[in-house]
Amino acid sequence: MGGVGVDVSFEFAMLSPVGVAGIGVIGLLGRGARSAAERLIDRPATPGRASHRVLRDRFGEAIDDAVVLPIGIDAFVITVHGNPTICDMVCERLRELGGRDASATELGADLFQPRTEIEREAWSLLASASSPSVVRWLLEQADPRGEGLGGWVRSRARDASAEEIEVLIGRRWGLRIFDPPTVVLSGVPNAGKSTLFNRWVGHCRVVVDATPGTTRDRIEEVVEAAGFPIRLVDTAGIRDAEDSLESEGVRRAREAAELADLVIELIPPLDPFVGDTRDLVPRLTATRALKIRSRFDQIPPAEPGRVVGSSGDSEATEFPPIGVSGLTGEGMTELERRVVERLHGVDRLRADVPVLFTRRQRDLVRRVLDAIRAGGDTRRIWDLLEAGSRAVRNDLATPNPDAERG
Image (tube, rainbow, N blue to C red; front, side, top):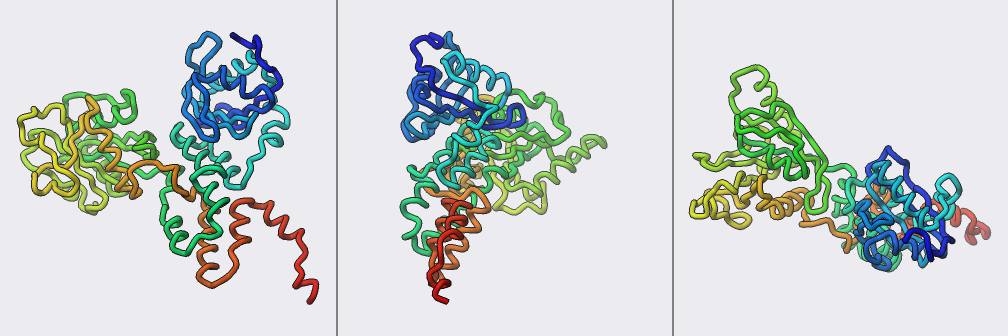
């Protein structure tokens, strides 16, 4: 293995700051880049698509889960977790495969030029991505050959109707990818909030104990829900507290719920009634509350609480339509789907439809819509969206025949 038999005519470079970002971005370029990439990853990357792959060292041991995007015959962009040790291990493996480290040279600035302004915006956001799912979504949205925004602008946008533009503007969730909505876990003490929080985070982030009132302060992490990043908040159980410390925790829990984009109310087994978060948090509206039957693993199959309804029929069954166990993970997929439906109106992070993901894009598309309604020319605005400042420079360099005649 190692560099034996590998074409060494390729360069690689870190395209993102090391040690200050959640995601590390590495570029490969040159005649030997494909051969090196094939030896680095566990199976070939899908041409023209961002693919989840495992990077392996010279002994076949996993280095990291990554997203690999071929951007040409001899060019690749690889994103890994931003841990400096992981980035160093990947770069060391590329050196073993015969690559030249051009991180301190012109490679990142000059050789890896994005093809469009949309792609440049996506690449600039890669280091801020919260997960490989977001990285893959960004790359696919920006790809001018794909089904996302980049491909749509290049091939179909200039013939779009006002109605199509309105639909595009209506997909507001693209901007929330990098400003995750806040989702608060709320309920009475011992409802299973911290256990569910740990399940969602993927490790024991919060101490869990059978004693009610263990959680006293709000604890938050950015996690995924059906591919979307959300800011998940665990809070103290809401009740009439007996001591000042717990009272402060309850006050903070109410405050967090009032400010949240969505509140998940956990209703535990043996609860004598189906609670209502709006009673616990008076200023909470029904549209921002999602009830679930928590600690679902503790409900025997024969009990009525095991029979959960479909969306919208919780009043008929007297139980929330979703049963979830933070201990076993039962019901988590359905919970994530319901959460993103409430927040964004879709059931998953989609790359097969165009979505605006920067304010610049949104402002320009609004200008397009205004121009269509006014019967004006939209071509230059579309050019500006796709080509950015290059379109402006080209526009300024092109003589205006009408001005010359005037």
